[in-house]
Image: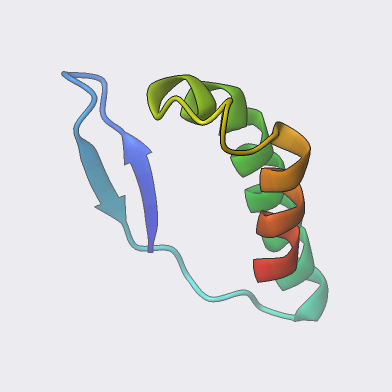
Amino acid sequence: MLFSSSKNGGDLESKDTPNSANLEEARKRVFDFFKLACRALPTVMDIYNLDDVATISQLRSTIAFQI
């Protein structure tokens, strides 16, 4: 399941996505998710005031370790 921001108010709505057809497609989808997550890190850091807790590099490493 993939979440995206809707155009009318920023509510999250779910979209069912099909399973990956093969390993190559699955790897690409994971890498695309990783890039999306990393691009969002500065905003997440600002929203949750994480500058005193962790660096963007530390969060990026944590995400990479989890996936």
